[in-house]
Each structure stands twice: as C-alpha cells, then as structure tokens.
Image (cartoon, rainbow, N blue to C red; front, side):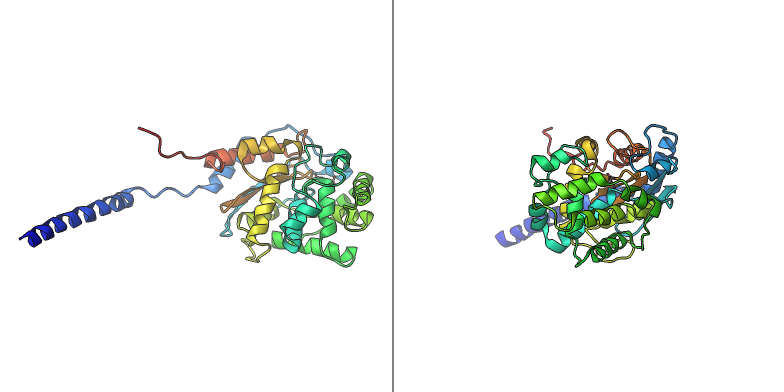
Length: 349
Ligand code: GLU
C-alpha cells in the first residue's frame, strides 16, 4: 500500500508541477505581443520637430562647403534585414568628409589586424581639435586615433597598394562596399580642399618626421582629400552605418564587408572620438557610437538594431551637424536605445 500511496502522491505532485509549468506559458500567450518599434513614425516625428531649426552654419574653411544648400535635411534608418526608412531629402548629396575615416579605419583593421592599428596609429582620444599639430607633437606621433586628421591620414597611408593610385582604388572600393553602390567624387569639393590643404600636408610630414607616416606624406594627403570628397546621401550613409550595425555584412548587398571583430573595434573608437571635441558629451547623452563630418553628414550605430544617418550641413561650434544631433537624440530617447539605460531587476519588495 505504501507503493500505491507513493504513486498517488507522485501523481498529485506531477499534476501540480505540470499545471505550474503551464501557467506562465498560458499567461505569456495571453499577453499582448510587444509592438515592434515604428521607425518610420519616429523619424517622421523628428523631421517635423526639427526641420525649422536655424542654428549652426555650414563649414567654410573648405570654400565649396559654404556653398552647399543648408536646408538639405534627410534622415534614414537601415536595419540588418535591409529595411530602409526614409524621410526628407534622403537622396541629396553632400561630401562625406570625416565620416569616411570610419571606413578606412575598418579596412586597415581588417587587412592588418587590430594590434597593428593600435601599434601604428593608436585608439586614444586626443582631447584636442581634429587637425591639431599639438596632438602629434605631444606624443611624437603616437597614441592618436583614426578619427582625427593625423590618425586618418595615417590610416589611409596603411591601406594596401603598391602605389598611390592603387591605394586610392582600394579606398574607393572600401567605401563602395559599405555603401552598396559606386560612389562618385565631388570634384569642386576635392579641388577646393586640395588647393588649400597645406595644414593636413604639414600634419603628414610631421608624422613622417616621427617615423609614423607609412606612405609619401603629400601623395597620401591627396588620396585622403579625395576620400573626404566622395558624394554621399543620407541613404548611402545609413547603409554604411547599417553594415556596422549588422556586424560587417551589408544589409542591402549582403556582401561580407568586414568581420564582426573589426566592427567591434571600429565602434569603440567611434564611441570615444566620433564627434570631435564633443565626443564625450555625445556619448554621455546617447551611449551610441557615431561619427560626424564637416559636410553635414552624420551616422550613428545601434549595434544589432540599425544604422541611422542624418544629412544637414549647418554645424555647431564643435563641427557637428546641429540637426543630426537633435534627431538622433530624439530617436534614442523615443525608442529607449541607450545601451546603458539598464532595466534593473531584483529590487527588494
Ligand atoms: N577633409 C576634411 C579635413 O581634412 C575633413 C574634416 C572633417 O570632416 O572633420 O579637414
């Protein structure tokens, strides 16, 4: 009888366990499925909210940039699945400028490995302006990063190629792979900067004096200037950012552009040095890797979720697009995307 007692108890216990296991599952089923974030709605909202902002001014230290229509305002999100959400002037072109530095850095890490980038350039914020001679002088060309001019010119000098033309082809091919199309150079912007980039040449020569320039300094500054002059739209930039958000696979072309490990290092440098002297403030407010350029292009990456780009030429004093910052902060807050905004668990009752 002990046996049958046990089996009855056993059955009861089993039944209770079974019911207990089923309750949460049923409760789960009856819960409403959480709504997928409506990216289109949020960017429409941001566009409407900020379209009339008049703060900021086009960069004018490169003459041609001052002539760009300051009212261009486009926002695009590209997800890893290749969904594209657009609003405003998403197909208007501006020159890519410093945003290009992200992609040459990626190529260098991909080709030479993350250690080489640390050893040959560095990954530390300089705390100084983007074209600072002091930043080079202070550390004798060491401990720079690829998102300020000296580090970016070093980065371009490390791109594979047996001559400058081959390096330029490699840079172009890299940008094209990230953008999923063949980008074109903006000739007036290139000529305008090439005629007036003695300061960048000086940075490259100074680096050479410290043994930290890996190609002829003047030739490579010219390649770098061309790289900065490529025309891109907000859609191009969002596809490029979307490739980073997707661990290196282009969401549109499906091409494997760089490895996930390369992307992790790239995003880290964007997080610490993506917005010139305001990189800390940006990260403090959003927790997202981003990069701006003096042409008014701006990208941010929400890893695994999407790349976002905004094009709007008027810049603030630090050199970052005013509207782009407002828009992306709006999107981050509306969708709760700051990765450091943690939902706590386990509070005592
Ligand atoms: N081509 C520009 C320069 O070297 C890029 C600057 C930028 O966008 O920060 O001055």
